[in-house]
Length: 320
Ligand SMILES: [Zn+2]
Image (cartoon, rainbow, N blue to C red):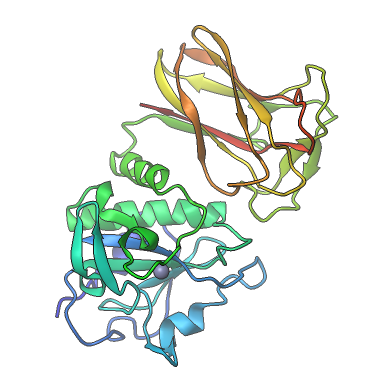
């Protein structure tokens, strides 16, 4: 049986924070292991800053109906990888086939990350997302596979698994691909806390209420029919097509039609999003032709006729 004793070194070399959980090199299930891809999961446990890895013990030791270890690594609330096993684990069950991953024994075919969030009313944290992208890119590079070899359990499962919940797996794979391209695809993130690149009037409050926030906090304002946008300034390196992604924390009290304004090469374009749902992840607003230059490029406007707080958290541009 093959093992992946290189896992810890590969993760650390990619800048991923690693905690080695005991005798990981010898903790595994009997049976075959010859991985060609990575499988993403959520644990269904509720994590928090003060309880960052509630499912760690179960992932190491298993549960009455399923022997451990249950994954090669658990990704905690802060994005720290807890490496549990260098060999076969009970995480995937039978693969029904997805993308380039064939039908067969999922525990032979794939390395599993259990991302510790509950998936019902809690989504992946920004730290979990970013660490999972970096780790997946590094492992697929080591395996000699492209980003299509990263799948979600809900894509390979033959028993109706729903994990990892909420996340757009195609966006996640495209982020892995960009990471593997080694920076050839220009990408830049402006958060509400990014110095010199975010401006908003004092009418926009500061909050850290939602665990789905990007970074330490985000801004919020009541909807009102005046021009009082929060602006994100980007230094676009060259004229071209750029994908614009936005990240907001979702809440039932937030705005159902929050307008994002993109200042394109041919004038302003507006895209409205429902900030009551699909929070805690990058959501694509579209791909737009942008001119070069360092200027205010994307805004969140308060000018919404819908009820609920308008949220301004993070925006990302990626050249495509
Ligand atoms: Zn799963």
